[in-house]
Amino acid sequence: MSHTGFPASAVTLETPITKRITLKTPFISSPMDTVTEHSMAIHMALLGGLGVIHHNCSVEEQSEMVRKVKRFENGFILDPIVISPNTTVGEVRALKEKWGFGGFPVTEDGKLRSKVIGIVTNRDIQFHSALSDQVTEVMSTDLITAKTGITLQDANSILRKSKKGKLPIVDENGNLISLLSRSDLMKNLSYPLASKLPSSKQLIAAAAIGTRPEDKTRLQKLVEAGLDIVILDSSQGNSMYQIDMIKYTKETYPNLDVIGGNVVTKEQAASLIAAGVDGLRIGMGSGSACITQEVMAVGRPQAASVFGVSQFAARFGVPCIADGGIQNVGHIVKGLALGASTVMMGGLLAGTSESPGESYVSREGQLVKAYRGMGSIDAMEDKKAGAGSKDSKASNAGTARYFSEGDRLLVAQGVSGSVLDRGSVTKFVPYLMAGLQHSLQDIGVQSVSELREKVIQGDVRFELRTVSAQAEGNVHGLHSFDKKLYS
Image (cartoon, rainbow, N blue to C red):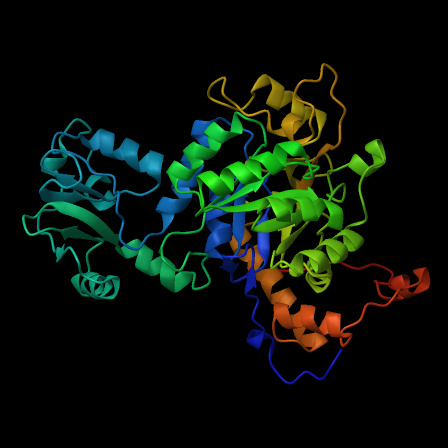
């Protein structure tokens, strides 16, 4: 620990997740079916991190979740949902339920590049009881528009002054070309750290796929939906399946960033780096719901894995994700200090409101949420049966991840359980962020990159703690205590 001459707020948490993409905070939610769907992915991105959408669902469902992430926040909306004058109030309400927003431009033939004649908003239909009425009965026609070719800055200025919810961008004939939304302006103010590509105002979308031939079709649909980063989801990443998929993806979709894994040794990492990955995911058997090390006798302690692989990958400019074993802020700090650029969390985020599923009261009277490893019997049986999907095209995500989709007998490498309810991720992630900033302040570094540099230089050092030292560093000597970590 060196001299602290700066406030915690001065600590920057910006860090790369791939060779080309940098995040404002080093937090990633795991592609597990009890952790990340579109709600978690949206909120993690708004908070400066990233949510990786799981693939325990049909291609259509996963693609739809990617679309929802990309549509949530935009600059110019180049493909707005457009309706015709014959659309009914009831149909507009159904569209609002489907897409999560309620403002739709109305054009003469209900298509983009047709003359815009009005806009219907949530306020127009909220108290309109006649659901069969056409939108022409309720839509706003006193439109303020801007001409195509206008800059985003100028368009935002017009939108602010107009006090309207939407700004249609039209050509010289009044045909709708794109749309600008006031709600996006508000999101920019509320979430200044939001994860976006430099060339886009949309949130970064990430999703996981398997490494089997049928996953090439899934990947195509995800790319069409707007995918920015794909994670190849495998418990043992150094396989012929993954190497072939990396090469195929980089050749077919050169603008898509590929994160490979999981790996725990330099030799495993070398194969994936040679194949062309843009990032690596490190960890085998260290997750809170994973029993691979116990059952299979295969795996490696997470600290050794992160340090060894990250040091090796840094020589090739490949960022690494520490995946598994993150239970608190201290574990995040250790993962970053050992060389990881980001940390991936499953169980720590599974109890938040944005994770899939509802909270329920346990036998002990505590509010909890279901959480399971993708290698649990429950998860793998669901994958083999296609459970939770709308059709028979569901991915065998759990079984494929553990190379067991063709097995008659399933061998569990994970467990099913529950985690305590943590409330909204919009409060929990800022707590993790503040905790990380204070930790780096105590250490005497002002950024994640400086932390790694100081570890390599020997200015920040790890020290082996005895059992007595560990006991001394925890709560002791109290008759009772309440361990409340954040509020």
